Length: 301
Image: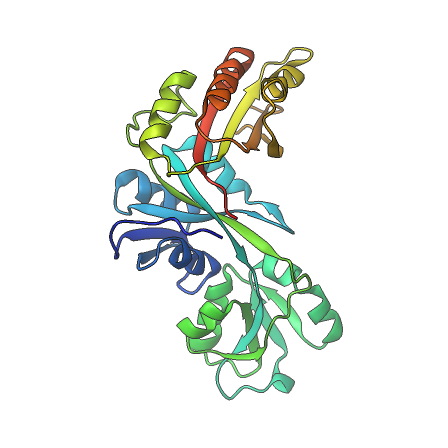
């Protein structure tokens, strides 16, 4: 799992969530020595990157069990940002309480709904304990510690336990030991003007922007596109990759905001900015109604 290097330490990197959350851990792994800037809302994370109050952001885009983080997929299309790198973080959930609290006294467990859902077997084994949805994994630890709750615990990662001096009562309580979240490192486009979602740019211009931001050794590309509502439109769009022996590692459709019953396709393919990829994207621009290059970066090993 390769890190994305930066030239200076102390660079401000925005995340959504409290300090100690999994995004915090991913940010420190991707940008060693960074200064993490927590944000309450995902939109605020992207605002900071676009306005320059953070040099970059680290966002979760997909969990191996829960799937795509829909809001972040939408924001990647709507905002003037560019994916510079990816990192798959192993998600390990711990049961964390205030020091002195014994497991036998725990009757409530706070955490993000996705984290609670990923620990179903724990709650089946301990039916006396009530799962309580909370806005954030690390935030749940912060809450339990701040309120000095003697009958409650939280589910979060080890980073959160260290951040708030919590005690791990049980480690590794997640159901699936191959639970990963893929994170993106995003930055502002070097020549951003209007968002690509609002103003369609030719493939050539998008690729020129990519070249200015792209990491060395890039071998993976993420795009979003919309097909025209005509027979065979999706087949023609995907054929631009098949004709050039370009492998797709992911394809997913999502509703297009503001246009009911219309959809965007999100595709990851395993090529960087080489001739075959450039020709495929130019060809796609001819057959699709809309194309946005979200990033060209080095695939995580």
